[in-house]
Length: 469
Ligand code: ARG
Image 1 (tube, protein in one colour):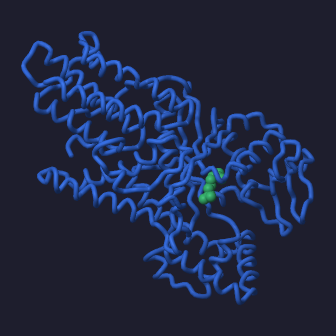
Image 2 (cartoon, rainbow, N blue to C red):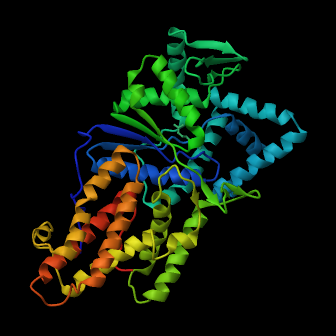
Image 3 (spheres, rainbow, N blue to C red):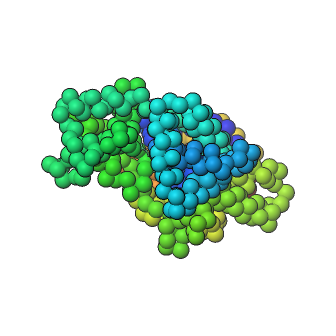
């Protein structure tokens, strides 16, 4: 019924300026955590919202693909690894190797040195080390890609931490030039006492660079490469200090554009009130969570609409949409209690509720054999009291997008579509839309307008809108 993406709600706040969005950014050879899920979902919604608001979003996956842990991993793989096992189940196998390395290192401290020396080889460009690293990275990315595909998320760049290896000398030189580097506890740091922040670590005594150094290089690269209007970082609030230091150091270096960098923090995903990263050594695998959500959606469909034609596709859209909506419906700084039952409810503030309202509105239009011939705005001109509530709600859509864009807050759109769903369902319960009457055409046009806006609202959150479910 609605084939095209609607222009309604589009606005020009951005004048085509570029917005880089650092999002998702999981660590290679480690499981994709709930924090990375939140960053992916919020970042993707922000990309869609800023695009709708007249900016050009650039989604960057700043992969955690460099650091001493890769030396340890190479050393562990050389001792105990098995290529077939890694290929079959890369993240799980690499994690096992990494955990074993740490267990063994407790009794055999020589291992730590071995790990360090492999990382040194890696940094010096040793071919064997580089090949293994590249292979771990490729295998991990293959696994992450399955999750991104399932969620319908794509990236404009996968330039991770390793990408900045040859771009950090320049940062160190610039810092030296500006006399910002000082020696402290065997490391090179930038003091931030005036700003009442702890010093920012740039270089370790052995010359190894750090997370912050790579982020400084990345910030400068993004400025020079994209000339961004804004540079966003969707990263958990645990890293707030890191981003404060980063922005402060860049300003000390004389880069005014550092004012255009924004850290967009978010709260934690909790299960029974506790942080949900690991449970008793067993990791909560995101893929399993999504699979379970899709299963539950499938069971629902079997119960309620067993004759639906594209059941599998719809189960996927509803299952994944439920997880995404649950994440986006509250202000991002709030912690979220993880509950599949809660996410998949058909009443209340859930993704399936909005999707279901959309499908119901579509079914009304189908029953009426109604085709959108005139612009939906026709409906506004002849609205009566009951219709007016729906119409005025429809007119709020652009405002909710503007608020979401200006506050980097997708929950504005999520709350809006739930409200619209409620207003519409109330209207539909009170007014016999399909009954023959002189108002029928206008009412159907109104229903059509609701479908357009619900679909567009869901799209801005990264959620599909099945026409039947
Ligand atoms: N890989 C990091 C982590 O998992 C997140 C990276 C965030 N982005 C950045 N530019 N520092 O903690």
